[in-house]
Length: 235
Image 1 (cartoon, rainbow, N blue to C red):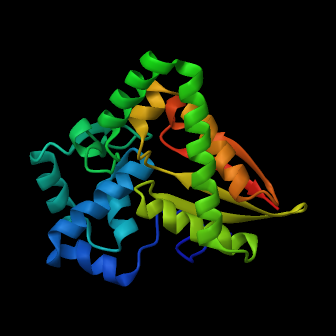
Image 2: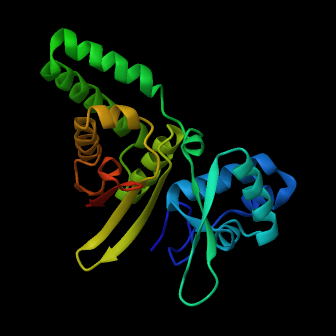
C-alpha cells in the first residue's frame, strides 16, 4: 500500500520527512507544535510516545512541546489504562486547538446562506450550492489533468490540502484492481456543513464528477460524529 507521503502504509502513526523531524526536535518550536496539532487532528488522541515515533524525535522533546501547547490551551491530556500497567497520558485537541485549522470564513458563509434561504427559499439555495460544487469539480478536473487515476488523486489531495482539508490518500491492491482511500481530516467549511448538511452530498457529487471515469463512495462522514471524511475511489 502506498500513500500520499510516498511511504508504505503500516502501523506507524505517520512517516515524516527528515526536514520535519528537524523542526520537531526543538530547533523550530513553532513548526514542531504545528506538526503535533496536525497529528492530533488526524488521530484524535495520541500519547507522547506515539507522537515521538511519528515525528522521529525523542519523547523528551515532544513532552516539552506538549507542555507548551497545554499551557496555551490548545490541547488537554487524560489518563487511560491499557492492560494491567500504569495509566498512560494521551492528548487531544481542545476547541481552541481546533481553531488552528482553516475554516474559510465559515461564520460569514453560514450567515449569508441563511439570509439567502430566508429571501429566496431553501430549494433555491440548494440549487446554487449544487451549481457551485459542480463548477468547483470542473476547475479541479482542469487542474489535475488527464493522467492515471493515482496521479490525479495525488494532485487533488495536494489541491485540497492547500485549501485546508488536510488530505491523505493511499492505494489498495485488490483482486478487482487498484482502489484508493481518500481521507480529509479537516473540514474547511465545517460550520456550513453542520448548518446545511446537504453540502456534504454535494461534495460527494463533486468527487464523482472529478473522477467520472471511475466510482466514488463515501466511507466516513465528519458530520456524522466521525473525525474524518473518507471516500473510496475505484477505476
